[in-house]
Length: 215
Image 1 (cartoon, rainbow, N blue to C red):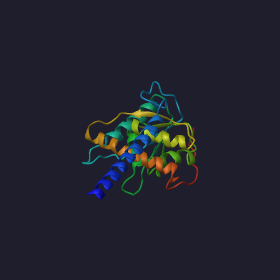
Image 2: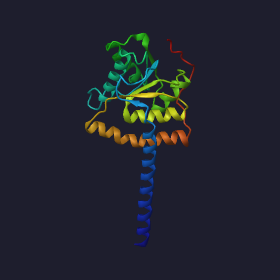
Image 3: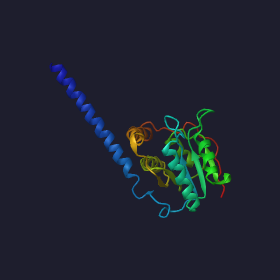
């Protein structure tokens, strides 16, 4: 019985410490968005390039992913209001049958964005890759990230750790069960980002030659 009580006490201590650890990282990354996240195209400063962070086009069941649609709509709005001149789409292109950048490009063209104003980063397998490659491959330092608020905060955290100075345009949030599941997973994604940057010192899966974004 005594051994069980000791085990239970240790287990509770581990749970408590882990919870505090997650809470502190979440708080730290949330703070990165202060003054850097904008809700409307009218108030956001202009930048040459908007970095559109990729996500899957389809949700479970085959319907259009609402996160995907909201990000596309935001990128188009910024472009038409002349808040960005170029859209750099960065996402997962891990197989010949799945390409977030290509899906987004095709839909951006349908929404009226000229093809010569769209650049693709096929090696944005995760947010860290997209942000680091924005600088190391596309030579960006000051630019506009386009994604949902919770994702803005993590992307800005990574960017600031890399010495970049982006701002972020907040795409519409997604409500309901699907939205809540994504938000819940974000807590663990933030812990992973913190560990990757501060402990493991991870780099993108692929780098490569510089790509010049024309004016």
